[in-house]
Amino acid sequence: MTAPNTGGSTTQPRPREEWTGQIGFILSAIGSAVGLGNIWRFPGVAYENGGGAFLIPYLVALLTAGIPILFLDYALGHRFRGAAPTAFRRVGRAWGRWTESLGWFQVAIAFVIALYYTAVIAWALSFFVFSFDLRWGEDPADFLTGEYLQVGDPGVSFEFVPGVLIPLAIVWIAAITVLAAGVVKGLQRVNVVFLPLLVIAFLILVVRALFLDGAAAGLTALFTPDWGALANPDVWIAAYSQIFFSLSIAFGIMITYASYRRRRSNLTTPGLVVAFANSSFEILAGIGVFATLGFFAFQQGVAVAELEGLTGVGLSFITFPAIVSQMPGGPLFGCLFFGSLALAGFTSLISVLQVVSAAIQEKFGLSTRAAAVGLGVISAVLSILFFSTTTGLLALDVTDQWANNIGIVASAVMMTILVIWVLRRGPELRFHLNAVSTFKVGRLWIALVGVLAPIVLGYMLVSRIVTLLVDGYADMPGWYLMVFGWGTIAFLVVAAVVMTLLRWRASPDDFTAWPEYAQSGSPVPASEGKERS
Image (cartoon, rainbow, N blue to C red; front, side, top):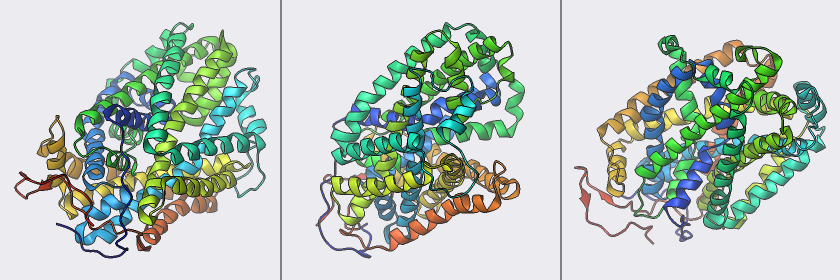
């Protein structure tokens, strides 16, 4: 069934770019999933939520939510051949215009995340350089917030910090260059080079960490199971949260990436490879990070439990510089760590930006280069204005909390309910996955996506909203949270509505999905699907 034409001209769309093959897609998808959160978030979350016992809810979350939603993203992008707005418009049929708005909501999330994600990569590049002479000195915390970031009071500042602005501009130039080169010559080529480089660098770092004094104590602290933690619902929520944020699902990335796969392409088996590769890297990161923290605790004569700064910015830019200063061969270790951080961040960044670039290419009929340059320039200006100033760290922290914990989770809840319950497209998407893939999914997949996922994610969303409304965040002024926190959510909604109302350069509605789907679930003979003139 073809949705009615509800707007846009009959101009023919540009031929769709495609990955050269399965390896290029898998490496690019892994490059997107493996990011900053794998290195600075997973180890601390695991340690604080039962240690070795955390691996049980983590694996359950991966199998019951992470992989099923990843498959949902793949099915949407591959069957409906478009970035998030195009895919949701086509899956919505007669509802198309309004289901399209969910796609633009996801695009807006990606746009916001890209603005501040580049800043963290810029910090990593700076600290990569600082590692050569251990420039942070004896007090990395004071160096980070004082000399380097020059953090001021909450507010809107236009006092730029050159040490952040310059590497931030370099990151944006590199990102625009990759996007302008296209899917194969840009995204795929970068991931084929950077991902193996990241793995090699991080393996060297982990092996070095394992031979440090106190490494065994660090690993014992991480992996000693606290079985009593399994009775705590918050531990299970933490596991689902980690899997959800780690796999790059539910905000357009995997929908967009899957849309570049050829028609006859296996989806589920590569999906399993991506999911387990991402989790393997997280466990590897946990080993490296806690072996290093064990050394730090040994040097200070304290237990690992007494250390502070075990996650996020504190771990990467305060705790690790302090460790590097005390260890043999510290400069080399620092270069490996911050180089890995920059590589992991950059491969994720270009996937986030591709979500936005692909969407505006399809909506306005722009070339790859025009979309990349236009998007890049606007994004770079906003990123520099907000995140290279003395209030950049504070703005980043608040924006990240709301964009991730409310924006992305709300997107996932709406997506699963819309596709499975409102549009009733679960059986069709299951049929599509099975028609092109070797690993088949059963009706249980629909139940996991349509029942378990919205319940768990809905609970996460509601509890986080209540906490932010009641307790605020990080002792920030209420007006600041309103502007950079709730203001971010308001921007996502407004952007979604406005972009939906704008006219398409070439209507996405004249489209036939392939293979054809009969309500019985059996395929109807058909030639390969194509966009009809």
